[in-house]
Image 1 (tube, helix red, strand yellow):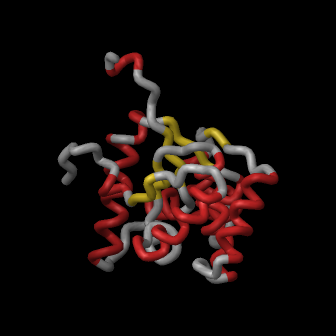
Image 2: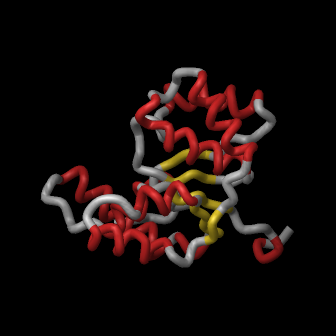
Length: 167
């Protein structure tokens, strides 16, 4: 099969991506590095994938400082929105009932549920507390699989450069 005939991989853009993409440069070294990696991925890699968001991303991106929210919304305004249906809600509820993700972070379970329900290949995030967390993902993968879905590969922008060097 030629590269041209292969289907493009799908990436769910979680809210931390437009947040890091559009934020003012941080003076904290690690945060500044994550912002730079996000911008590089956005400029050099995003066109290689089909990108998706959900209403949850729009809702979160709209919060906070109005100018910052406007920058976040503008960055993702062209991205296709995935439907939030009953299957998404039920899967998120199963994740939350397990106690793996705390109630205050229920939107994190919803991001995972949306991406899983719609057979997304990658969930791109900087949320390493409740989403890109290996200890949690082992347990979430079990719930998602038991529910009949496939857990996307959950990763950060630096992990989705496809072997390409980044600066």
